Length: 615
Image (cartoon, rainbow, N blue to C red; front, side, top):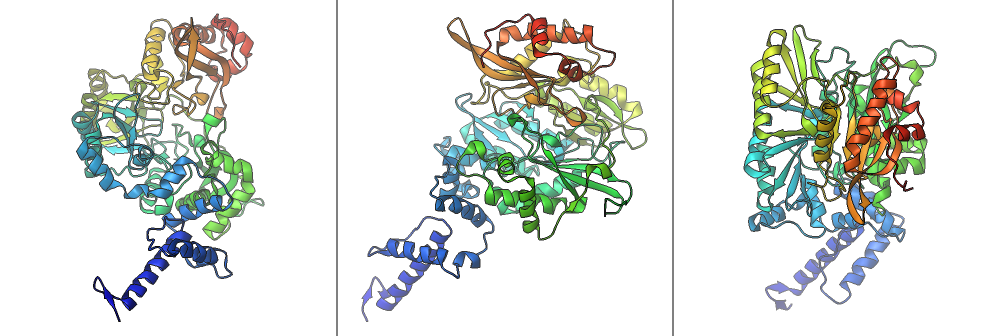
């Protein structure tokens, strides 16, 4: 028996066989082969893998597609059809995005940003390289149900001051973003958040985004159920189930408890709407009580609200049902065309009945069907309930909704609000989907002190200004996709209108920078989407303008008023539109109802703006 480098022939044979077996297993799972000793080794791996995959006793059946393998198996089905994966899918296939922390640390030590598809993979850890808008990272957090403790908000402000741009942005998912983070500070932000008890794994890229719930959960006098525990349970399920990181595209989940403030669950991929079943009758078969109605497929940027499935779910079952929905999406969502990789398009392709059938199969049991007529109708939401002072269900306690100009807070303002929450509240803070925050548990006697404290911070609590209904995404100042400087333009519009229009009814004006519609412009009373407009041979910032959008009990997708308007014309145009409303409305008529009973032609007339209309 000969020896070579300390190994006998039999030992070498054993090791070659072991390596071959390992590579066959990797090939079956869709992973790259890592050993090639020559002499047809790769050919043998391919041959054996093919036999295993198509044979009568397929090894794949013996190796359940769980964890990361579930995502790889879904990709493999498209490849087996001769299709090409999208660049992002191939990037995830080549490198596990949840295993790149050492690479991220090395890049931070060198002070360099990621390159190529690594830019996409970094987002799995909440870091977005926003070049060319800024030569920096944006960090998106993950704050389940929007609830923060005052010390966490203070800690985030400290992180922003030390490692980022000295401000915090509240998002339309009741979340926070930090911006202007240098290459060497990205990992420091990440570890700093973890030390504050905030884990933002999967807050970007093809993952389930921040789970939202009713902003007033637990203290809303009108709510049917406190949804914050369910949002937190879903949050922890996501963090600890690897299969929740293998999606074809981003995914949104929301819990609405039937309270005063709209949660916008109908704009989410999965919405749980609290309803009351009053009594058992001939058409229903469940005890009286509070349940969730399941809605699916919301994506207003693509002109679609989530639709009712006819499914009624016990609240205690909601996490298991959401998990089953996510896993069906993992298995069958499109991985070749990013534009068609959202849940809406799988539902359009299959129809709801087929999708629910797969969910029930994943869940292992049937779901309860019930007509919405057997549920008590939902209460109308209060469009001003996220601003100002409102009584809680707890005796002698109020919450205050603070107006944040286009969702932005300085570090000092954040610390000041944390101090108010500690001094006059319970140390709790709630972020909302309306880009502002609430301070709950304020005693009646402390209201004047809180009012003064908010004003001393340069902020507002009254619901009468244009700013109280103003929403804006980051825009071109911090996002490479945006075609206009949305936050700056929104504030300029507010300055213009506050001097000329006095509002006594809520008006929501949404500025979004691009077709992704992060600010959900289609559901605003007035929605503006950034676009470039040609003026005297120059391209300038401008907007597509839509009107008459709505949500909750006034659900509607806005109608296009103008496809392209230079921003310089927007303030006067909106002023005339609001003036028409103030002068010609019926008593107490909401803006959306007023605007939608007039033709687009009539609305164009009152604005006195006459561009060449582009289809």
